[in-house]
Image 1 (cartoon, helix red, strand yellow):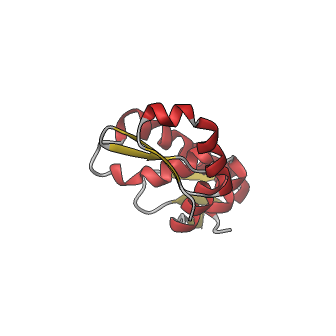
Image 2 (cartoon, helix red, strand yellow):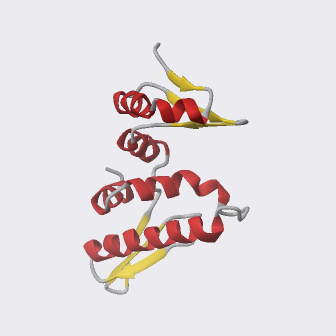
Length: 136
């Protein structure tokens, strides 16, 4: 298997196009900086993998002439009159959660495990998030 790995940041910068070409084709690509290593991956491939590995588990409930939607284990829940509106509201709530996570929750013990979810939210457009919420 052909991999693209650069042992230093300087090497990685010098071969930036090679890193992106490898990522785009789905080949492993990484760069090391001191004791850490970063992977370079195609964003859509990563988004699809995260969506597959982490189903939303969203629960949709009809109540009081409208709809409620929540994701167990996450501090997000929304209510709306129609199913389309509740999905729109949840997409917005997820984007706000991702912003909060990036700003201050990433080190909180009860939120730090949500890295994959935040990446999924950041890499998805609204329709992709709606499809993920309903399990498509």
